[in-house]
Image 1 (cartoon, rainbow, N blue to C red):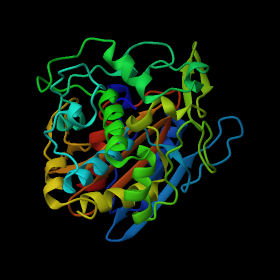
Image 2 (cartoon, rainbow, N blue to C red):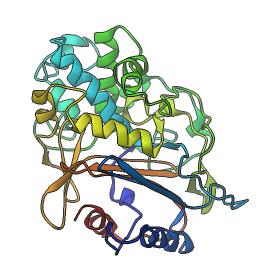
Image 3 (cartoon, rainbow, N blue to C red):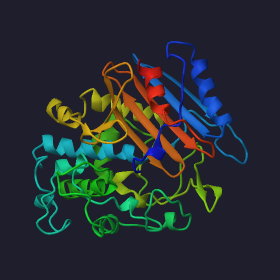
Image 4 (cartoon, helix red, strand yellow):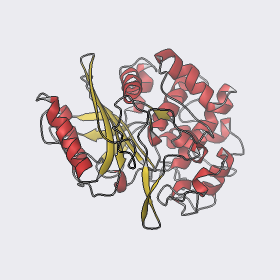
Length: 357
């Protein structure tokens, strides 16, 4: 849901992708043995061919094995879908990226706010992150079993973000804020006249036949098969699989699979969902945090061997996701379930070097 250092990829690989796939699996197994993960699902797509595997177990109680075809909560990867729909609407002339938000969504932001659509999408609006407000039941950093099941509305999420001082004046810096994508999804609804979930389904999921990608709304359940997610609460590790996705809305509510996410990012970054001009603007990134750069709903990660990959990461209680694609068309999708052990801070660069270098 929110990008923090604690979301660092729980994967440290040392063997080249061109080597036996068993080596990749062995590295993931080692992280399960170290209790850094309870499970991991991984897919690498290259040249039209997929290789996928699962390690660990989908349930810490039964130790039933994880399923490579399993569903998982994708967290902030949802933002790429929302941004795609807004870029499509921009292509159609329904809005301009440099339009003020209040032109299309009057009354949502404080009167006279100069925040633009572009500033929402690239996190330069300055809006406070409602998920970091430290309020029980709203924070993505402090798991609370009871509050995580509450029903929320987008207006309530936005109200929490607006209750705190902005990080800076619009355009005056960069700060990751889930509040931006609550407003972005509200914009989709206003411009299409439909729930944002319906707009995403009609414009992205159905055309790409992403039959295993869901926008669950207020449904706390997870479709089967899935690996259970775990979180720390009062000094214990607890099952955090069930949560009310309305807490995240357009900032991170989606559920998907490795194959569906690979298909979506292949289509998006392959220029099949927006105009080339829109895609170029999505890929125009700014310095962000932890060596990452951010565009319009896309993250850019620099490779240790030079060049970059584009995609998005996501984290919510019990689930951590990375989807990254090189311009050559190689795609990595990883869903991991953090557990009780520690993971290395340099894991992401090692993973990127292994898959893409």
